[in-house]
Amino acid sequence: MKKARRLAKISSETAAVAPVKSWNWWPWAAALAALIVALEIYSPAMHGPFVLDDRALPYMTPNIEGAPLRAWIGIRPLLMFTFWLNYQDGRLDPFGYHLVNVLLHFLGSVVVALIAARLLTWVNVEGRKRDVLAVLAGALFLVHPVQTESVAYVASRSEALSVLFFYSGLAVFLYRGEESMGWLRALISVTLFGAAVATKEHTAVFPIVVVVTDYFWKRGGLRKNALFYVLVAICGTAGAVMVYRVLGSTPTAGFHTGEFTPLTYFYTQCRVVWTYVRLFLLPYGQNIDPDVPISHTILEHGAIFGLLAMAGVLVAAWVYRKRWPLASFGAILFVILLAPTSSFVPILDPEAERRLYLPFLGLTLIVLEAARRLKLSQIVGAGAAVCLVFSVLSYQRNELWGDPVALWADAAAKSPHKMRPHFQLAYEDYAAGNCAQSAVNYEAASKLTPPRFDLLMDWALSLDCAGDEHRALDVLHNAEHYDNGAHVHATLGMVYAKLGQNDEALQELTIAERADPAFETTYVYRGNIAEAAGDRAGAAREYQRALHINPQNPMAREAFARVAR
Image (cartoon, rainbow, N blue to C red):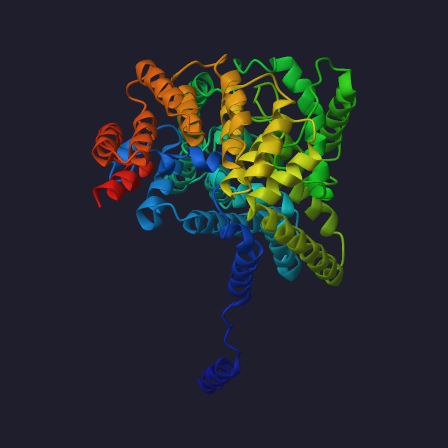
């Protein structure tokens, strides 16, 4: 009895002096620091305007003000829903749209760290070393300059949001127990997969990824996780139908693009894949619009060497999968995740940095394979140095994204023989009021492509803005040969009116009205002529005709208010 009391006393004293396990605060501190770093790196672009396809999204649609949610939701419903939320909050203020992209990117980096931590545990890396390597994986994803296009470009929210859902679904799958997945975990993972596909179609490879993961790591199997794989198969089938519909309707992807056949696109991608790898390792020469020569045969531009190198890497990944499991799995994962955009399905732009966003995880795992063999101090030192350099490069890249003129000037310098960079540079110069320089760049673009109506019209407007109305007329008359409609004749009327040739101006506006009575700008220009002649009542009638067609027309609203006063 006394012995029992002594043991109880010793036990109670030991409990009293035993240290209480402290709260593990450092992951939260690391996440907060990562968020601050992300906001700082992307701050130049966050304060920049919309660029390129940003202006083609639903929030730019005329008369979208007050439209119901269903008017926004078409393909990629979850993506469009986020744009709808942005519009409700800040209308057309780009800052809110950019901020959401950065926050999604930050969350994606957190999920990358969680995935890395799980896989590191499977290769017997534990404790602080595992935690540091996982943070390194998330940091690389967060600060790498090649990610800039996917985050700073509002239209590329499709990448940031879909990949966040995809990685989250994969993380839920990886963190299951050794036994079969419960129905709740299976449902959550599949729901996240469905959300990813509903955001962007390239994530439809999720079923392949989970099957390969199960087989590679031997962490379950089809029988143990039958419920999960049945749900994945159902969702994957629905995703495949969605992909088929999108490819059939979009002019920039699918088998009807005209620029590529499936084989020529594949041959070209055999080279482009290695450009992505180089950008990951050595991120220099980034370009929003690279000029990529097409490989029409397997031998042209060395496509065969890219194909052989890719095959060699995959063979090595399989042969050495036990010695270098993270690198082997990463290489296989990289190829699978890149396949939707870089295999046989033609896309009008053969290369885009944002396409590395989803497969980035695969290359990160290869880096972790090498890093896990280093000492902890070496990992911390080398990792901090690399992340610091990448942060500086990312900030510099974001400075370009915050200034569209500088961004497209950079692209035009790097792709001097490609029309689009010069065209977009001219557009941004015009928007910035640099009319003379805009006309120069439109002329440069016109020499790199067969005559195009839209280019000729924009070029004429820049010449008119620069005060060179006579040359603007010459360009407009050239545009008539490609589209003899209301737009060109109304613009001719506007330029003739500026030159004081009102008879010619009214004649052109009459032709424009006959071509398309619903082209509201015709009546705005006719009202301008009446107003300049002192006929305020006649001007008001013309402005009202324009407003009857489009009550939101800013030129007509401003002009009508002016004559009404």
